[in-house]
Each structure stands twice: as C-alpha cells, then as structure tokens.
Image (cartoon, rainbow, N blue to C red; front, side, top):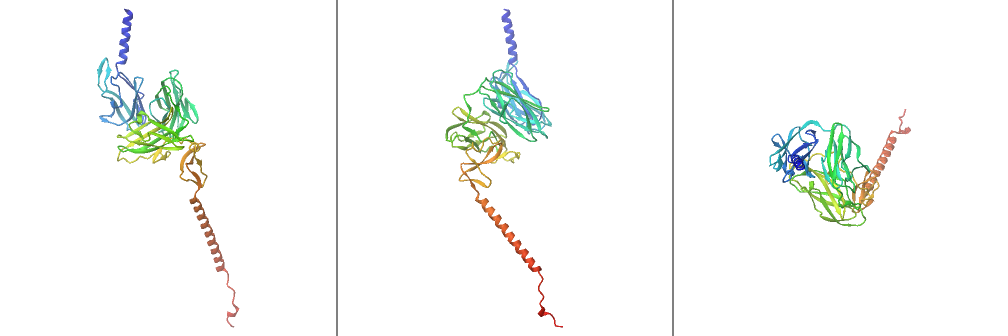
Amino acid sequence: MKKIAVLFLMLIVSFQFIDCVVFNLNNDELKKDQILIGKIQGVFTNGLSINNIVFYRGNMKIPFNFDLKNIQDDYYLYANSEGKSSGNYTIKIQGASYLQNGKLTTDDILKNFSISNEIVDFSVIPGLVDSNKDFFITLKNKAENDLKVSMEITSEQKDTREVLLYENGNTLTKEDITLKIGETRILKFVLGEGGKSGFYNLTFISGSTRYDIPVYIMSAPNSYESNRISWQYYSLSFPNLKIKQGNTEVIGLVNLNQEEIKGISFSVSESLKDYVKILNESVNLKKGLNDIYLNVSSNQIGEVQGLISAIINQELTSLSLRLSFIGENEKPKNTSSNQSTTNTNSNLGEVKLSCSSLGGEMCDVGQICGNGGKAETSKDDNELEFCCVDGECITSSTNIKNTNSKLGIILIAILILVLIIIFLKFKSAKRPIDLLKRKKV
C-alpha cells in the first residue's frame, strides 16, 4: 500500500512538471542588433509553429526574422533584432492549445523583453542549429574597434557526434578569433563521422557580450562529403531581392573529375524551401564549373539563411545561402566594400577552389582568356587569381596595338623636339658682313 502511495505521489509531481508552459529567454534585456534565444517547454496538443509566434512593440505588430525548432519535445526560438529600434517588446504565442495547471487552454502566452540604445559588440547568425551535416555561423563586428572573440564548443553528453571548427586548415574545439572593424566572418563547423545524436553548447564571448547557442547534432547520415563535386563558394549572400518578384540567380557547382558526372540531384534545407526552387532538378556536370539556376522569391520583407546540397549517390556537398528581401519600391541597400560581386549580388564567402581544380590555367601578364574560355576567380597559395577555364591564354592584340601606338607617339615627339632645337640654333647664328655693301667714304 505504501508503494502504491509513493508511486501515486511521484505521478502527481511529474504531471505538475509537464502540464505547465515554461518560456525562458537567454537575455530579456538586449542591446541593439543582439540576437534573442529562447526555450519553450510544455505540452502543446497540436504542436507549435512559427504561425503561432507574433512580435509586438506596444500594440503594434513588428516583423522579426526568427526561427522555431522542435528538438526532443522542446521548442527553441531564435530571433534577429538587427535594425530594430530601442524600446519594450512582447513575444505572443497565440492560437496554441496546451496544458496549464491540469487544464486544456488556448490563452495567449506573453514574454516581454527590451532593446536598449547601446549597440552590441558583435552579432551571431543563426542563434540555434539543428543539423546532421556541416554548418556555418556568421560573426559580425559591430564595435568601433577590433575585437577578439573567444569560441568554445562543449557538451555534457557522452559518445555524441564530434563538432569541430574548421579554420585555416585546422579543426578545433576552442579558438580566439580576431574580427577587424566592420568585418563579417563566416565560420565553418564540420561534423565527425561517428557518434550519437546530442546537444552541444556553442559559446562566443567578447567583453560584456556572450552568446550561448544551442546546437543539436544528429547521428551521421548514410552519406559523406564528396571529393568529386564541390560548390564554387563556401557561402553566398543575395541582398536587395525585391519581394513579389521571381528572381533568377546563378550559383556555381564544380566537377572535379576529368569526365562528365551524371545524375546530380539537389536538396534545400527547411528554412529555404518556401523561398528557393532549383530549376536544374537533375543535371549532368561537365568538367570544371557548371551553372546551377535558382528561382528565388518571397512575399515578405526579411532575411533567411539555410543550406543547398548537391548529391550524387551517397556523396554530397553543401553551401550556405543567405537571402535578403526588400520592398517592391525600396531602394537597394549598399553592401560592404569587402564583398565581391556575382551577377550583381554579393558573395560573403571566400573562393574555395584552385585554378587546377577548376580545370583551367593561369594567364601571364598581357594575356587574356580566349577561344571561348571564361575568366574565373580562383585561389592559389592563398592569393586571389584569375583562371582561364574552357579556353586558352592568348596574347592580347589590344595590348600589342596599344604598345605600338605608344612607341610611335614617343618617336614622333623626339623627332619634333630635334627639329625645334635645330631651328633655334640656326635662327640664333650671326649673319656674315657683306663688304661690297658698305657705304663709300
């Protein structure tokens, strides 16, 4: 009888723990441009989606770029406050059915936070990760000086799949990263081949600013990084995309083999599925660089980020893609000067492939990429160079013509100068005296 009573008491206590909603934020007093991270625990009978989340400032709805993920029955919320003015805000969970104190209710759940006038030292995007593949984190220096940011990856769980930062050819779990004034740095994190699913805490600290990003890594899929195909860039950003318009963008996929590869397919992460459609559903890749076409559109202003993967058999390669949408009548925003341009759009990542990997050759000074070739940006020995792909380096006739023209002008100028000197000398010479024309005395 005592055992039954103890068991009944345990059931009551456990029920009290799970039949109420707990909504916590990492920080309810944000600085300007600081990200918000929250965790929502509770029993939602019909689940919880981004359609249930609304942001308010006073009584006015405010659009936020945010994401919500359900990981092991808990909900994780990430919101980007970049560009939001200072003041008091409210997160409202509405239209959700959940248990509260033993009763089923649909009452709104409110959580307040504020944004101050002080600008955060640096920002991090995204604020949560749920992945079974390599992923990317973007750091941006917001301070008026260089910053040293400490990064560390920790986990209390055992036998989980390994997570490492890939930086300068090394894999690390702890690193000090220096961000110059205004610098945006994209960090690539690689996953180990074995291990169970589990949580990691990804910490970034600089001065008074600290981010603890929840990272849930799933066990390794039945696929691995390809050594036959690779994206031209690690990551891309397409800014100034007009809403309610179909934008066609081009990204580069490289066949590293000497022969054509058939049957390449593509996948898009959940965060991008409503915005990106790959027009090449299945393609054959010729040697070197190939164009992959995307149809990009949105009905709302904001920014989204995710992964696009190219797959062949069980091999894959992924790139991080960020899209920024502006109003139909809004003027394009200026992008930072350190971003290179691809089809009028900015590329935030560095060039991944060498000229030899692109199947091309480096042209000497005074040569151009001719015979139908394309000049592609490549990276050799950590220096950006121009590589001639699908063509050959030839001497520029324009350069020869310009050189001959310059030489002719110089010779003519010298000749004119010599004639002027002779003329002046002749004019200044004294005339001889004519004795016959002297006057008679």
